Image (cartoon, rainbow, N blue to C red; front, side, top):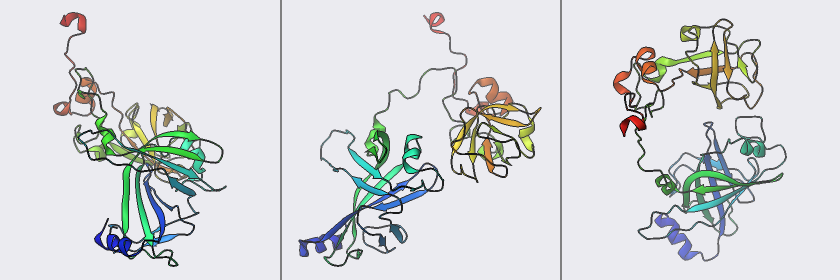
Length: 306
């Protein structure tokens, strides 16, 4: 809480208050909303605010509200949680897509979204005046959907301490490589960009099958992109990703493991990353990246080890 806001609250025992929500969605879109009755715009130089001038919408993205936020000073690293509720109006669409908010929540499009909650304090009769500053209330991640009905959805949000709830040890003795292909640990020659191909969906493409209009580069190599992630760049599914189940070059297609959420139309563009089964032969022969292989292909089976 900035010093100017502390001074304001000391001198104004009665004031207006509204929560401000910034939600960073997994599709790359940013959703802003307020619990107040009207929109609130926070200017760039507002005390306690480090972002650009931003408008928090009262109706456009549905009605958002939060539960209590608690904190404690102790040596216990238990994660704190907060409930977050969305009650969208009829026709409120998920940012960047044509699907409704409740349907998006049911399909996991809010999973692992980053949530920031602020509180704006305003003088009586001056709704929207946030020059005194804003207070940061909560920072965390949507960890699960606790309830979803025909009119609202309730999320549970946890602060970053929930990341400590990991199994130890994280690294296990196993044959397959634990890295994700193309990440900083894998670091294949040329990086992930050298193994990524952008293409345009042609006729015959649908929610299960993508038929590229052309097959440049490794799209012409059978099964090169099998088990690889494909991301929609433009079209109704922009920002969403799926996994490639089958990559055929006789009739150039990429078959999905699960169908796309929304219809795929010719002209939609996609990018696909090479697939990796995390085995040592694939790492060596397909990517020439044995130096970064972190699996243990020569570990004996348990009966031999004993």
